[in-house]
Image (cartoon, rainbow, N blue to C red; front, side, top):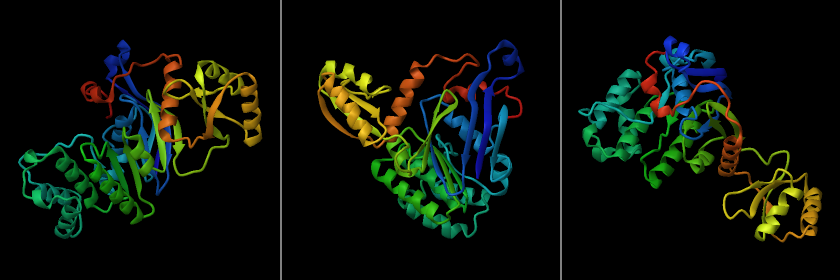
Length: 335
C-alpha cells in the first residue's frame, strides 16, 4: 500500500546548496507498508518522523527517491481516494463550531450521509456537550478529539496520525485505541501510520515499529511476531566485580539502564546459556537472576539510541529538528 524507496529529503533552495547549507531530514529511507498493517514511527525529535508523514500526505516531494501510496503519487492518491489525517498541531478557524467544522470537513471530503455520520461521530468522541461551542473555546483535549473525529468521518483506506493522542487523558487514549482497532477491523486492507513518542502505546497499537534516527531507518521491530532467531536473556549479577565479568562470558552484553548490574545477553539456546553462565560463575561472578528477555520496544529503542550515540558522526548535510523545518523550507524546489 505504501512504498518509500531510498527517499532523501533536503531543505533549502539552490543558493543553500551552493553554500553547503542544505538540511537533510531523511537520508535514504526505504520502507514498505503492506495493506492491513499498522506502523508506528518512533525516534527522537529531529529524527525525520514529521517529514516522512508530510511526504506520505503529498505536502512535500522527495529530493531523491520515490514515494507511492496505493500505486500513485501521494498527492494524487489523497485527491482521488482521500486520506484520514490527524495532525500534530490542530489549527482551525476559531469562529467555527465543533458541528460546523465537521460539516465543512464532510463537504470537502464528499462524505455520504453527512448528517448521520456527524451525529454518530460527535457521540463517539464525547463531543455532544460542546457541539455548538466555538473552536476558540475548546480545551486541548476536546480540540484533539475534534481532530480525530474529522479523520474518522470519511471511509478511507489510509490513516496518518502525527502524535494523534497528544493532549488526551489516559481514559481517552484507551478509547481512541479501541476506535482505531475498530476502524481497522471494518476493512482488513486499511493502513494506519502514526508517529508517537509514547512507546508503550506504539506497542499496543502497531504491528511494526520503525525506529528513525538522524533521518534513517535504524530498525524495524516486529511487535506481533515471536522471539528473534537468537534467544535473548535479562541477566542480573551481584556487585561491580561481577558486572565486569559479564562481557567475558557474553560478548556483546548490553548494560541496561539502572544500577549497571543488569544486562541483556544472547545465547544460542539453553545449552549455550548454561555453558556461559557456568563460565561466568567459575570466573567468580555472583548471578542474582536470569530470565528470557521479551525484547520490548522500549529496550530495543534505548539500546539502539545507545549505539547511535557511540557511533562516529557521519559527514554530510546538517540537520535541524523537524519543528524548525517549516522555517527553512521556503526555497525547496518542487515541494
